[in-house]
Length: 160
Image (cartoon, rainbow, N blue to C red; front, side, top):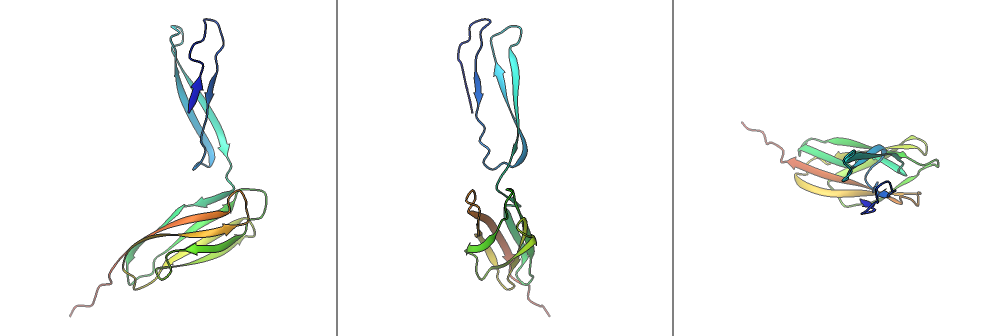
């Protein structure tokens, strides 16, 4: 979003303010804005903003997709990493897919990195969407939500 002085006298100074919403971004980022003027010598300029967006907790990926046949167990993992200079703890919170998905939380690097592994439950067919909430000790991000989608076909039955 930009705000700016609407009129600047010839030879005068003006102000352009760019506001960048960083929600949903992490790491090195860049944004730009095109400025169009009525100055015949420079009728267009490009303003660039570069920043490193530090988030309290990195989650990769933010969602889990489990697809397959209902008679096969499908597994996927999510990596969670502390983005602050203090130890991170994770505790299981609410999960609305009991009976369809199981999960385990493994601490890979004490207080820094975790691996959350998801597995489909054999024999469950159909589509579902849900989530797992993990409670943290960071007041900057007290809950991490991982979205989970599943789609499983009925198991094939044997034919003579």
